[in-house]
Image 1 (cartoon, helix red, strand yellow):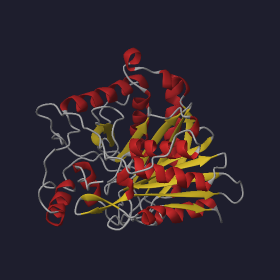
Image 2 (image 1 turned 30 degrees about the horizontal axis):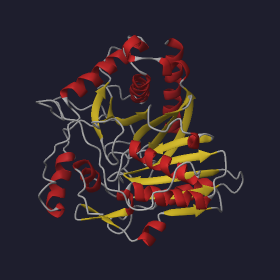
Image 3 (image 1 turned 135 degrees about the vertical axis):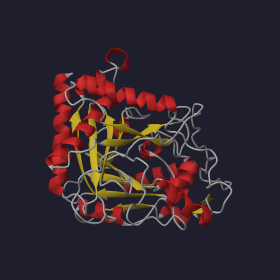
Length: 409
């Protein structure tokens, strides 16, 4: 396999990684059934061959294939002890992209229940969540003998990105959203999380054509209302909050493996007295306008192309951290439709968690995935800035807002 260069989105994730905000994320699949660890390892080997950048390290901005024995260490079976502690220990170890692969897994079997949790930790420089879900699906299909394993490394096929409209501008001129109230102190490199689920029931039938908004818009409004209320009860009720929202910018919605998620800002700029449906339409209007104007644009040529990383990275890092750029009050993501969500290999899940990658300005991130009749929502947070009791209030407020929306719509 030749050594392909990292894309602009890959490089941004690489250079923005820091000890305080590791740009990695994790997918936790808690199964109600036992799966043989050897089958999972066999599926992981096939997935690393099919999506070959996950079997590489990064050298001078290029993907370089690792020796096979290095990749074997990327999958571990952990069968002793209390499962949550093992998961936390596994997730705590940072990536060394110069010497190891950007994707690691652990199969953690709970000693008490016998159930297992498949933990997939990924550095954001190699893939977004849609691509990682495809990776895991292939692994599980090979492990279940539903698909033949890939026998040799496949060609790297990154996602082709959509063409931005003329005059697209990534950072429109506006004031920054209100920061989220947090406990006093400095950000840490630690992550904690809590996962909840709810039946999206009738909300899943909401259509853009009939209602002017979607389930995703309902969940975005719930996030905005929750953040605004959190600031209000803390006496921090000044500027309006906003969220940093990912958008899939693939030319073809699910083609290619890698990074194809950009970000737009959605603000709580609607009137307080609007009903839930009109709030959802206001959010949908913002999303449509941001898409049409190309706020999600990713420059094809930047300082990262043509200049060695050791020179360009500090300049790009300073530019991306400029204080006047608006990153919203927190990040939110929701994957509603994705290839394989009806695949039988995802049946019998007791819990589906996504631990998000947080920006240095954020104290928490909401990350949701819809599967079957339920939506799983994980709040990942920095325990130095928000305490478990704070997150419990935020979580309960979010769930109650979604429940009220379900009744009202």
